[in-house]
Amino acid sequence: MGQNFAIKGRGAQRNVHNRFFELSYEMRDDFLEYCRVEGEVADKNKTQYLNVFPKTIVNKVTSPDVGMAYSMNMYQGCEHGCVYCYARNSHEYWGYSAGLDFERKILVKKDAPKLLEKHLKKKSWTAHPIVMSGNTDCYQPAENKFQLTRQCLEVFLKYKHPTGIITKNSLILRDLDLLKELAKDNLIAVNVSITSLSEDTRRIVEPRTASIKKRLETVKALTENGIPVNVMIAPIIPSINSHEILPLAKKVSDLGALSIAHTIVRLNGAIGEIFTDWIKKTMPDRADKVLHQIEECHGGTLYESRFGVRMRGEGHIAQQINDTVRLARLKYFKHKSMPKLNTTLHEQYKDGQLKLFS
Image 1 (cartoon, rainbow, N blue to C red):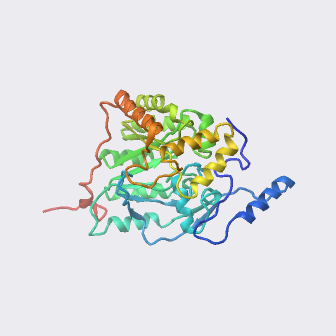
Image 2: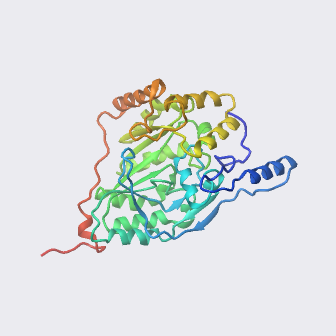
């Protein structure tokens, strides 16, 4: 589909300048290029896990067009390496680059389950769905090692509290036992991200994610076990996966998904530089076309920050994409919908067990 990656298994191909720092990565990148040309090994491309200790874990989401009110993230940074990921910019707040650092320096919040339990026991807290992976994937490869997502699911089950999950990793099926228990009381909804039916596209756009086959199997397995699934066709990138909306929607509907959601790619902050560098190396024959079409969706730029517009875009190409998604919903999801999660049980279980009333 394009040229081989200089750094295999990664989305970003270099670090980019952190806008919060005066120092840049230019000298380091020059050194890496010198080593590559000279045949020396300068970078072993290993992932580092770094412990961090936040005081809280549940975040209130103020954006009106995200579709969630509260989120939590057990990990910052994501080894999946999706080149378009909006969460890359958040790594700069931790002092790292939104490029390779985002994929190779994973911050681990080992106290997440304890912090969640503390939050759910607050007298002032009224149950509202808390979405895991509002920023980075809670089932990324780090979860194999630390199992923080599973521990948090156990907390949600203990306190009968509703939660949602966003993931593109089949590792979620490891926790099918807990998901089934949560589903009995309508306390769980899963959002599986599937951006393409093409494995070739998946390999270069989302290099360390689960295969398309495994993700489709995940949708089927979850729905067969009574767990409601929404499939996120997000982001839609013009001339890369925009032609797949209808066949993808039909496929996941046939597998039991109850709905689909979508966004049009926007390359805000450092992501514009990362994506531009990536596409010119991996798809040189269509790089300019794709970049120009993304710009056409966002008023001549690669990004859009206005609420209500940034997710859907504007212009002819954006309109075509949004109309195709509406058609997909009419054709394949006309009599389907995701259930509203149950918020009524938590108050009775705030102590971790059913309260007895006289």
